Image (cartoon, rainbow, N blue to C red):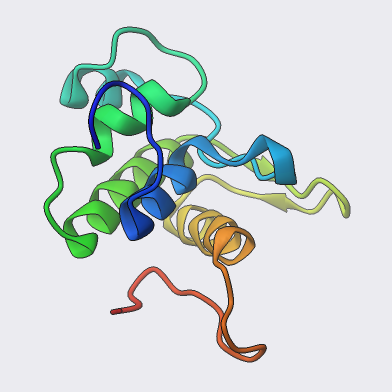
Length: 127
């Protein structure tokens, strides 16, 4: 990815979308950049994880496996410190690894372009 925008580039863009979401489809991605992410990736400010932050996190990765590991690290850092309330049911999810993986799976399945109706996405999926 060149410049400060994430565009194209297949699986790398998919990983960037896991972070920044897709507002056209109401997919939130990772809600916020944490102080650890700011320091770890050289992100200029705290706030939502938009295209510039996603670029700083994903661009150095050479493979899909590297990129998805960075995405996982970010989800774990955020969701092990923040609780989640389901938007429709109101069901609370406590901060922790289970919530981090639930959120990553949910966002990944919302963003994944399925080629077969019964094949969703998982964070460990090898392509």
